[in-house]
Image (cartoon, rainbow, N blue to C red):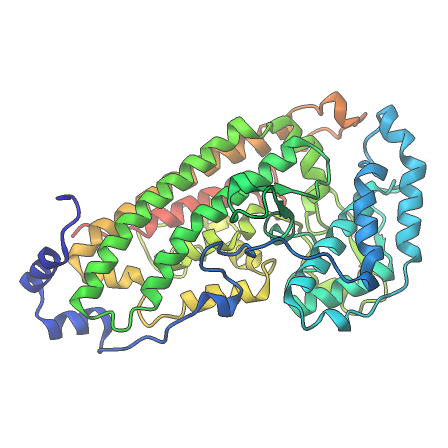
Length: 465
């Protein structure tokens, strides 16, 4: 009880440093009142965060061909590179599956436009079908363009426009929208959900989605703290400063728990299977270093401008919310110390912003709202000596989380890129490593991007003076 000062003690400390008028002006410039925010307005649930509180409903009967295609894909299809006898035996069934997709009528999505959950379901179903189609198709010429047939390309582009999301498989599709209840009578939790669509059909893939879900659901605690800060009616009041102090202390604990979830991935997800069997299904047309050819969306104008990198943990809205709240400067806009290294300067400074384009538009608007407050929590802490310590403690904890993330990326991507595929992958020939850096599913150079992110977090720390 003595660790966190009571509001009375905190106010006494504040009075010893500032009078009311000075405190208000130092933090805010004036006594500004904030416009509140309701998470529901951005399709963010108060209890489940970026997850919908219930599984998405199946599409209406008029769109059953999309659902039926996805339901049959896992049994009919294998990666095109898989040369095991079992995979080769599936080739005829796979071609029938793809021919069926090409034969679909081009369905108009007009009847879905007024139903958000149906639009989300349509995007998930079509995006899974897209990746099944592309990555199961044998290619005589590995550099040839891949044509996405119009009956798949046109509605996927249309649904994506409605949701303001990329027309490709995203983190939202594989993690946020791709589950069902174990017990429908119980609320959503990691233990009460199972993942339905698995491109590889492996436990490794399911375990990765489950670990990602654990991060998202734990992150709801962070969202509640962030929303509390945004919704403070008058952040210049002493009671508001006391609340910020308590919330920063709680936020540190939550980030520590997130770090433990990150650490648990190593015992739940097999690195070799992840890299060679699961990850190839996620590759998009923008993953240049993986040798993926371009994708042509037949019947869709301006498809060359589409974002098509595929799903990545970098698209997690909950982690972006934390960065925005703490004012982590990934783009090196501010002159903070220690100065960025030469490697940091060469990193893709727009990576986090690019990843936001793969989020549902409503979630992107939510992040914009968090970032639009008159004074962010870093500025408040910088102007209030008693808030510096708890603020820096959160930043230090987030930096340790990113250290853990770098270890995971090294094990699951960088190290595995130097290994040979397992026999179950059926990959007979593998190109010799070219000596270039390992690339993530988001199309970024893994080591450089993560180090730059970690260092940007460290530079967020306020000086102790």
